[in-house]
Image (cartoon, rainbow, N blue to C red; front, side, top):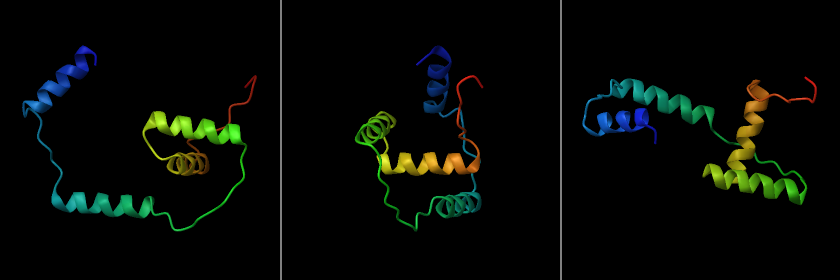
Length: 89
């Protein structure tokens, strides 16, 4: 951690910050999150062995299941926050 991060952690652990999250707002956020990440469909795809190993390796580094990473990539692409980068662009 750098100095700023350590300072923030120290302040948090010392109780210098207090949450303003109300029980009502927490319930609202939990409801929205549950609806956003509800996975109710299953798909099967064929990909190369090399791509699967790369996805599994990246997911391991991120600390998430590789299926979650694939789902996140698809979601980000469809929402427009993940775009293809073409050479020379």
